[in-house]
Image (cartoon, rainbow, N blue to C red; front, side, top):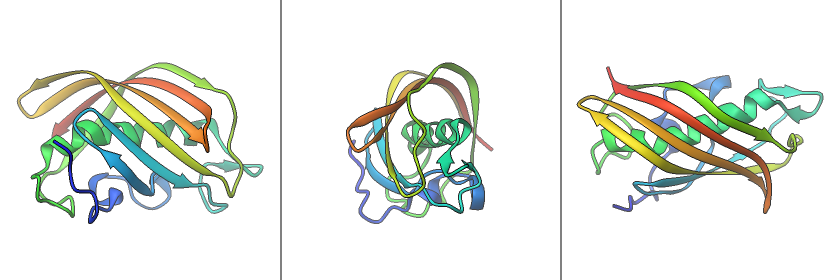
Length: 151
């Protein structure tokens, strides 16, 4: 299923708000992958000495990644994220390689792909690979295990 993302605001589908929101643009999403964009702003809480910190990069990758599985808990015609309440946990960070910290003013594109998924009723355990780029240059490579469930 390819969702119509024309009217979707990525922020509506994440529990994060304000300073902890580390995604801005939903570029693509289907049942097995997602792509997001994030401009690096000086006001970001994860900025250190003009660069986005490693923890900010990991948070961006994690928030992007959970959208793949998280969307399956929402009604297909839901364009505001109101049909379900979810909580997601990073169960394990299996791999993180950071090759470069982005500077304020740069734009990140983060792409994530579902590796495996186990659904148990209102909960899902999944493994997701994520890669973050500045233009075409790979700057972060991650693999996460998540637990996502309805509340």
